Length: 235
Image (cartoon, rainbow, N blue to C red; front, side, top):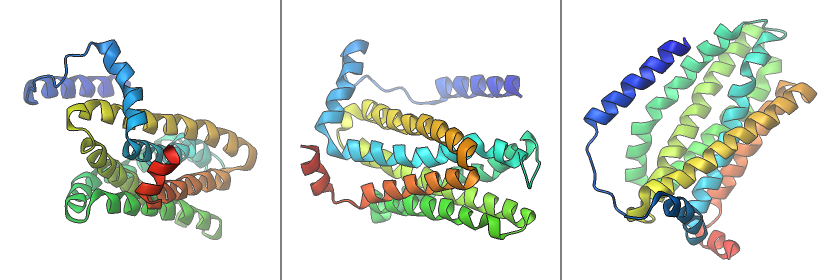
């Protein structure tokens, strides 16, 4: 499986190298200076900070779920193997369909609304997992699959909208702005995995879903907070 994954990545890399258009560099700064400019962009743009924070919080819940799902399914009442967790990954892959839809919604209604919609959908999906203990094991699996589809759609839609926002901040620095957004996202993923592992060991799966729902709610609150107030607080 890992060899197949490696081969597919190589194939995608070759296709991207040959098929993507070539653009002239928008800056002549050396690589070290480009890395140093990321901190400057972070300090300069409140919109970038909001986007990175909100997407990072969504990534906490996203990673909390996926990093502990296999362990949870292995225990009672499911007693399922790693293949079952992989099957849930197929359900979550439906989130890839959110990209074109989120792009159209951002064009029509503005990316700000899409970030709120995505965060709200993720929050509701994580919160709905709390209903699991009330259901039969078979019904719980269906609920988990539906929630995985829901929060993955929400997280992916928010990511597309956040990228739309940051790309419009400073067109000459789009790649660097996106780099800051990705750093925030992966910090959130690492944090979610670490916290979820500890919570699962101490208090079980309900604590993991509570963390995921709370982080998505926090992301929604970040997006609901007026931009003018956010900029004033940053100062």
